[in-house]
Image (cartoon, rainbow, N blue to C red):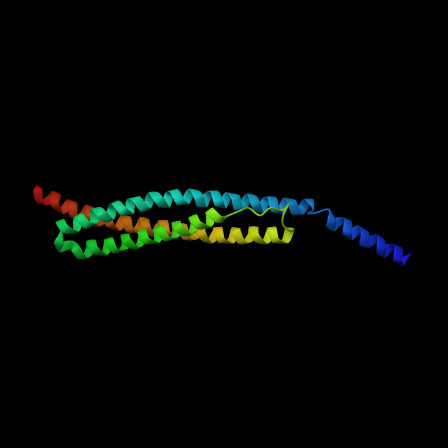
Length: 167
């Protein structure tokens, strides 16, 4: 009887393992896949924002170079703002390139072709990478916006001096 019970349990275990992922496992993978897909979409959207801000930064750098020529007495403050803008532009480009390369190579793990544990591991790794990338993107955008605001304050202050002298 004990042999029969052992053989029955062994056959049952093989049948369960051979049937593939359970409904709970499939749901877990679907939920993780949905979360990662949403994060990929957010990262892709953020790349567009980064491109927009990079364009504004590039324009401010060009304008700042011109402003520096017009106001040589203020070249130190303008130069400092330009240094911050150039640093922000470099960081924007670096983060953009890094995230773009990752997104280009991203593939959603397939439960039909991979073991459950490997799929979950890959999805969690992707989720963690995307969370870090989202934080880096936001920090980069914030730094670039701060640099732009600093430059705009200097530029508007100098322009208001010129307007006051004309009156």
